[in-house]
Image 1 (cartoon, rainbow, N blue to C red):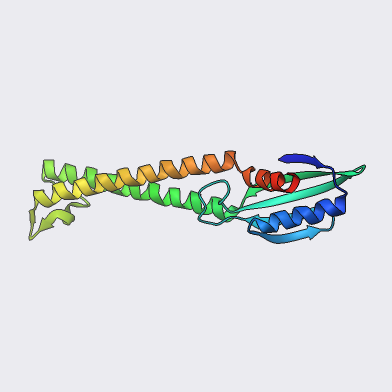
Image 2 (spheres, rainbow, N blue to C red):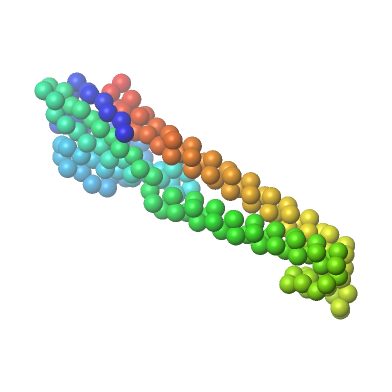
Length: 176
């Protein structure tokens, strides 16, 4: 949450703040003239604090001949949900890839039919060259997806930690 006191009457502060918010590619959601402005800003595909989809709620309070501006920023639920669902989906795929890897590896060592052994079996005979390639492919895919999960978590933590940066920029333009 950000707070700033500006040396403007509340009506002038409200008009200037609304203009500053809308100049930064925000979409007006609601307003209570001259006390509150709520905007949506960012994209569902944004990966930085400035570009991630969020809701910015600004409250204005009259203090003598000045105005106190309070900004509260929250990530949109659909941005959080798509991040979480993507990580869960990638984790499920990692588990499946590792299962295939271990299953095929066991089949190649023991020659005992297993759940995934049909992938490298042709006419009842196992092709160990294809098996080795398939194991390498599933290991690489599991590693790639694991890296993606780590990157997504890092993006989420970074965006969450710096979520007020958009509001800070608006307030800096608005005041400065």
